[in-house]
Amino acid sequence: MYNAKAYSAASSTSSLAPTTIARRDPTEHDIQIEILFCGICHSDLHQVRNEWSGLMPTVYPIVPGHEIVGRVTKVGSAVTRYKPGDLAAVGCMVDSDGACPECRAGLEQFCPNMTLTFNSPDKHLGGVTYGGNSDSIVVDERFVLRVPSNLDLAGTAPLLCAGITTYSPMRRWGVTKGKKVGVVGLGGLGHMGVKFAHAFGAHVVVFTTSPGKKEDALRLGADEVVVSRNADEMQKHAGSFDFILDAVAADHDINAYINLLRRDGNITLVGAPAMPLAVAAFGLLFGRRTLSGSLIGGIPETQKMLDFCGAHNITADVEVIPIQKVNEAYERLLKSDVKYRFSIDMASLKSE
Ligand code: NAP
Ligand code: ZN
Image (cartoon, rainbow, N blue to C red; front, top):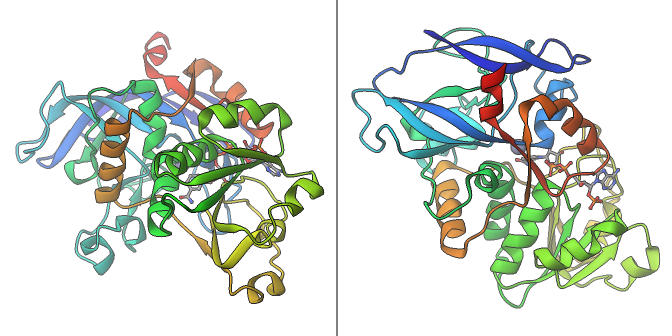
């Protein structure tokens, strides 16, 4: 065991503050990574503030962060795919049983014994796992991803959650050339959704509550932008979408989007608002439309997504901040004031 520097919150109403945590020494299949950048996902905020208390109550102190890019510092004796000095990335998961049908299908996110990067029971040290708001992390080789060498590292970190969470449902629902695709909410997830839908050749429409994000949306790859508070603008698109990705972090009227789908169109929720959304049955009945959810993506698909990003030079648009600004960044997330992902430069933790 060794000590690592980190930022943690002591309760749902506490700010994140400097602390020291225990990390395990790498066992034979483990990789120790010096963390260089860690993105801030709205899920970090939901969990630090215990907003998902019904499904996954937060255990305090919590060290958030699951969009991790770094450099390998040590490898266990049985590790074959990485060596010290290599770039490496870790997303939302650090372990799973490896034996169940979900794991065998490469869908580790649905394994009943999956371990999340933070706030999950830690089978090595007891207590819960601690995330990427830290100077280092130790992870089983099976959950470490390869980083394409051409990508900017600060902008690569968010691919590990915002990237895979938007890439995966778009692949599953056949987002390709000739399809009309909507992205609701231009935040961290939404802006990656726009980039992927554009790269896959779809006609992309962004729905935003922030009129000030219109030009950015077009620059990111949108063909059209709709300010969703404008009912007339919404009505123009009624019954026309093949697929809509809903990446909104707060309560909102999902029926307004269901009504924009064509026959057999699908809307997939990736946003995870704390409170249930009200769904009007008729919107789904008429047009045989479907509403689905999607959770991050499995490890093989995450690697595919990273390789796709390497080949197409895709990274997140980031505002790089020192860890000392993490609490301010959370407040800005709540105001939809992020362009379009915060990425923490973890070198800033050295001065704590
Ligand atoms: P984010 O950066 O805060 O973006 C959310 C966006 O939603 C905002 O930028 C805003 O876009 C829109 N929005 C916010 N409040 C709204 C409101 N009251 N009404 C309508 N729109 C609103 O968050 P994120 O990191 O992208 O995460 C989005 C959600 O996905 C969170 O709930 C997060 O927990 C969840 N998530 C799920 C998964 C998964 O596996 N399914 C993975 C990661 C995150 P505009 O300004 O354009 O309106
Ligand atoms: Zn996330």
